[in-house]
Image (cartoon, rainbow, N blue to C red; front, side, top):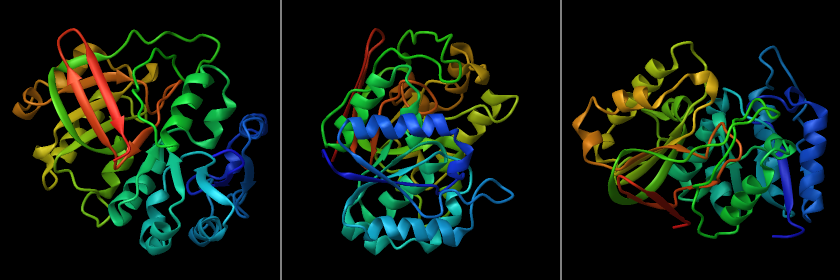
Length: 313
């Protein structure tokens, strides 16, 4: 993949919402590793909602798809309004060009919609701005490059909290909510963003899936919001045929505890029959693993140990 082009777009928030030093550090990191970085024409447009018009965002995506030198499409940052784009995307061209798509947070809706409409594997991983954060970047980058290169990865590593880079805390490791062994198709991402796909043609099948979910602290009572969003997924078609659940580590501001997690997953018989592992390094945390949406996950969880294997198919 060396010398491949990476096109930075802004399908949610404008690139102007990321500070220039972080952008420069991200660009320097990729260029030092042999990649060329280009930016979409409209990434710096910024309206009342810190985003840009739908047509501007679609134009930047179309340009990236039609550029033969662009091999990967990477959002500058997440946001809240990617779902506005879904009815207008050219899924036939997306399928034909087979670009690599990666991102996190609100980008969850793009990743899962592209997989649902085209069958292409996409990647739940860092947005462009995350590579400008030096703390724990080595693991994040290793997992990212391994995943987009088609390698098998195991996203179980110690990590540190995202916001305070100078006062980080080591991740004590995975929390096994329920033991078991399961294998299935990976879907999910940021939970509140993923739920925006419910009832649409862009929602990937839940049947025989391994659900990877995480969330960030948008509301004061985070645990209550997380619980009701989780149940909303279970109530979708084939929601009760989910084979396993992997949960990304929560930021400190979420005030999520092991006690609360156990209480959430003590409310439905389904949770007693599938493996459930929490406190994993993906989503709003650093470092973060890159997860192939549409790939395959195998979970082996006992009372003492959790293993997760990710495959590209």
